[in-house]
Length: 254
Image 1 (tube, rainbow, N blue to C red):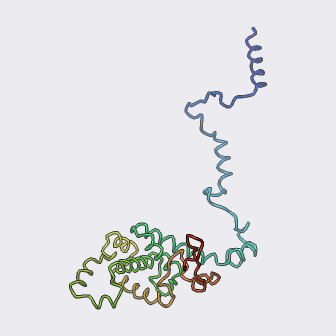
Image 2 (image 1 turned 180 degrees about the vertical axis):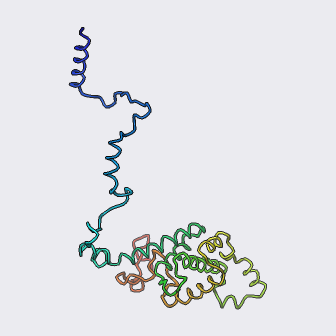
């Protein structure tokens, strides 16, 4: 007789008490419990039909209607005419050159000095002079070949023409046998095949690179290092030698 009243009292008492979110709840896992009904499914489809396709899609920067155009301020941003966007394309191009070159250097296992030399040349190099072969991966691989071979020649002393002229033929033959060009590296040849460069194209790009290193003054370029001395710093030659006092307090000259 009192079963219904007791249940109602228990329900009121349960609703008046705070609900513990950590309490276990019974979740039904029977077939069809998690699916939408026919009406809810149709409503959901009609509302989402004109929504964005992916979460990354956005309608910012687009006109509200097909016959309208974006605002003048936004158009200036798109055309990089706004002061906040001045030089954005050039900065992104420089960043892309550094990113691709750095990835190649890591793949080929270059030393930090060789990597910085390659980055210093590629980031400031004008790629338009390479014509149809001015793609960043192609030029970057040719620059890496130039830097690595040049450093390995310096280690052996092959860059010193005067010293080379004084060496006997036997020593020169031994030096050239010890020289290991990066062109013989299988990883480097694999990258050349991936970007579509053959021996003829590499040689042509290398000749153009040698000319541009002198014309653009990039032969000694190193990324992150300034070759010119700060003019605000005092010259070392203008400083007078500091007198170091002797053990007894007298001058060092005495």
